[in-house]
Image (tube, rainbow, N blue to C red; front, side, top):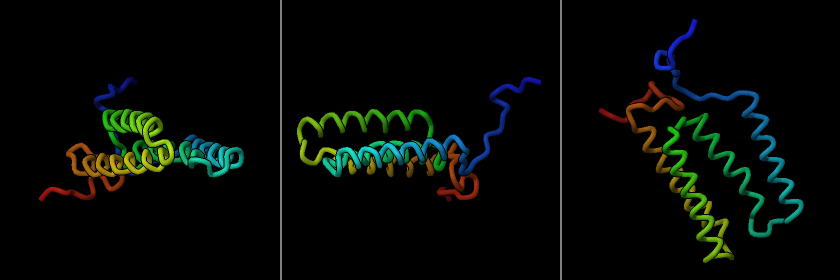
Length: 128
């Protein structure tokens, strides 16, 4: 029996599966490996875990739409490029700081939206 995608009910809330756990573990190992090879030089070891954790938050915890994920991704890449070329000494810290600010804004906007389906979705409402 084929059920059209539009008829499938997408339940709100947090979700996780074994692939997510393995992926997070691999990113943690990648960050550890970068730290053992490069040390804390430029804090490069933070990047794999930070990017992976961000997408875990976006996809599994707060369940943002693809549009918001792409906005964050483009902003992250652009800010990394600009800060690497113009503020080399602190480029990782600046990029992570700016990206975290945008991350918080996008999550806040998603929680306040009508179609929010992330953690506590359907259980809380920001509208009176």
